[in-house]
Length: 100
Image 1 (tube, rainbow, N blue to C red):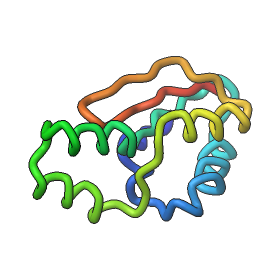
Image 2 (cartoon, rainbow, N blue to C red; image 1 turned 180 degrees about the vertical axis):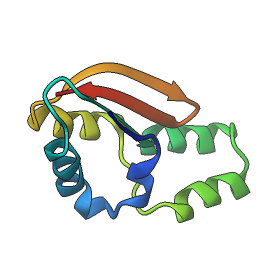
Image 3 (cartoon, rainbow, N blue to C red; image 1 turned 90 degrees about the vertical axis):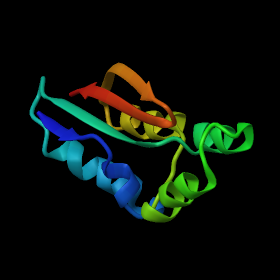
């Protein structure tokens, strides 16, 4: 079991595919990976609608190294042969549970 809830925000955007491949290589058959990050589309909508304050938006954007949308991350995980068992959202953050 690998728990990496907000790790994608800390990885350089260009390194995400290789990082996910590294995590997948550490998984045993039947093991789970829980991974998450900030969805750029949801964050953008929250900013435009005024759902979050400007200072919070700046902290989110400038704290992390990447802000990818959920579908991009799902595509990479599926291409690595992982099955997605659950997807959850909290505000503009997502979390995926995958199984090898």
